[in-house]
Length: 117
Image: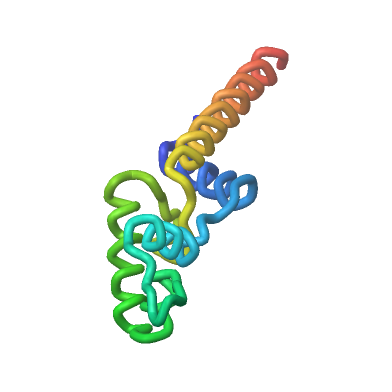
């Protein structure tokens, strides 16, 4: 029988091999552009994310980090490796289910093999 720690480790493997990482920077840019007003200078319009990223990259990175943290705390994103990569939380749930099914099937197979002997 697999331990919960082994099932979680398998779920992480499934997540990282079968699902796409969230592009956190692009997600932050998209969110910023959707929620902030377009910057207009002499009739020319610029996306707010691009302006902030170019004008104040430090503020951009800090706000991006806060946005990422909020996505994790709101259970929108999940990081299997303490922040090196992020995945949709729903994908994490699916990976956990697959890992549990794998463990259950392995256990059933072992029981069948031991019953045949």
